[in-house]
Length: 395
Ligand SMILES: *Cc1c(COP(=O)(O)O)cnc(C)c1O
Image 1 (cartoon, rainbow, N blue to C red):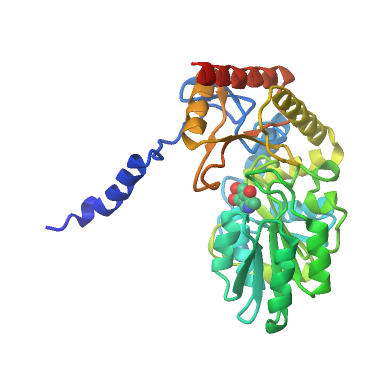
Image 2 (cartoon, helix red, strand yellow):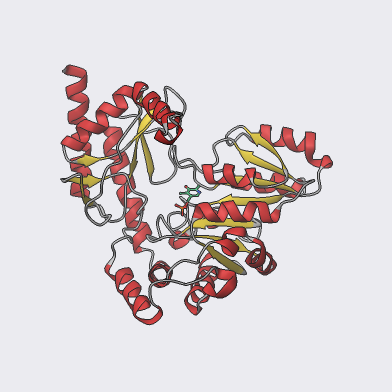
């Protein structure tokens, strides 16, 4: 008898992960996502979430979510193109368009879904997509769904991008240049002004995935496009509602005609149920809070500068981040995993980032500071880092 239904072919793969020392059982978060959390029964300072502004458990968003449930129920009940497009969703899209200073916004179920839906719907056979080599996995997957040809330029290397344009531009109908706004592993920003200049010189379309810039960079968190004053010069601005915005969802901002086309042809909107009322209600409140005040982004940046200054002073290598993302470079894979474990015992949770997420020999602990942290918590975390280094170097 064949062992196929015992799934031995998967067991072999899992065994290989174990042999390579990279198998892991997922940690369990036993509280709301906040600055202080309970992970696997142990209270720790959370230095590893994308909850930049502390919105994930904010009382105003929770109240708005509950109100939306009372009025609109639990589920949207259908995909957006059938009858899942509630007045709540319309209200969120209008508020986001004003916030982003764009003609129109279309909301997806997640940032991942947005990339999976938009890229294939705006490109065709005979087009070329040019993508930064460090772009997010959801862009890579989205590009795979497109009938267009692909080329990849070296990370933020404008010479390499130009080389591809010189070589290939004339062979294609439309050319779409795609980049992350903020790169998630190092926290560096795309060279957007230069990309836009090249795109205009070579008549290309531009597409920025600003998942880590939304709610973080620019005036009141309007994003990387706003940070560089490039309004009106980026064709497709993508963002997530799952990180700084604290809930769940993704969006594309741009021209009205873009929204008209994508509303009817972006496959995740046609074949997957729309976001539930609780999420949309919370997001409307979140956009309102960001529009009204810059206190959340200001606190985020102040906390991030505070943490970075203390880590630098303590002699840690924190890379070349231009955003709140703070990689603590340890380089060695095993040391990185060991440090993360010891920090957990000392009351600090920060997950190790190792190969294949980053190249071999570039392992790091990626610290995500939020507006919800107190300076006291951040100082405790710095002390824990110092303590672990002392133990491992001297012990
Ligand atoms: C997190 C992230 C996404 C996915 O967003 P979700 O809303 O979590 O699906 C997409 N692109 C980039 C660059 C991201 O960092």
